[in-house]
Length: 405
Image 1 (cartoon, rainbow, N blue to C red):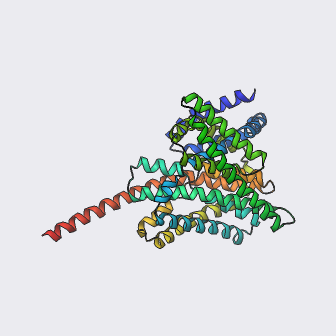
Image 2: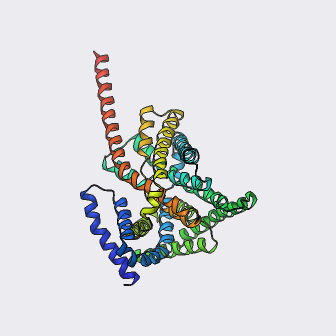
Image 3: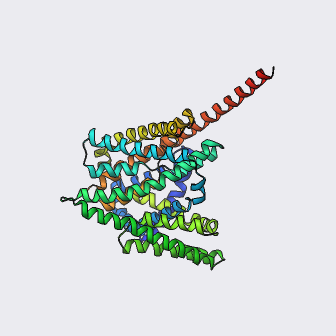
């Protein structure tokens, strides 16, 4: 078997398994992770397949992370940011702060785990699944303030999570070393924070200028893939974070180019097979032993993350003077996790090899749980919100009739 045959078989298995996931109402993301987990833990299969998983992981992980980071950036419009209500910013900041500290303090004081692990798991736990939130909102045909708030909060939440992760992974790397040096960490942090922003800005401007020169779909497809490869390769060359560089590149491009819709369509053609392969390959890295060892960590992570999202959103909603019921419901809506958390956990695993397996296992257990529970909770919350809106409108009409009489 060669690597191309292996990838082809994996894609066919995934596509046909997708039908089964829909029938049993299992989230597709979780399904793909479970396929990888089974393939990586059945002794006969894992013995023959693990070498191929390792090769595919080396080939696909960094490109997949780069594509998703770029897509995250293209969703961040400065026009939308300027028009974003202060209420959204306040609520987002409060739930991020509460979630991070809820996870961090729980892991430190309840389980007394090393600080390097706690800050990484807390940083990964902040991310919210934009795909689940957007899809369920559309599915429920929800409009008005809650749809607007959810879109704004999720966009800002994931952007800030990426920035927090970059800062924390550098600190965690320093803490994982035997001799921690704050001055060396500060210099490294400056390099890993400023250099990706500068390079991302330059690549974004260059990509905008290059895209203007081409009109054909084939040419634009080649230019887009080429630009992503160059940007990812540059990040690897300078040993800086791919996520921040590609996010900034995406932000600059989406705010300076009139061709962003075409580029979005091009990326949608490649991200599905890339994403499926990525999930299955990384699901295979989960072992039963690591999951069992991380069992209590996973439970504490799930409980503390839920508490942070709900309480943080409720308090943020009150500070922002958002309807109290709406503020509480938004917290439950932000529970789903998916690809962004997966990418961050894989980056943490490679960046901090000493604790990488434990961080990855805990993060993945939370992701699987929130993938299964998050979407149904969001559906229930949105349907209840629609009922309460209908009740409010009906009562207002009734009161108007009473007043007229």
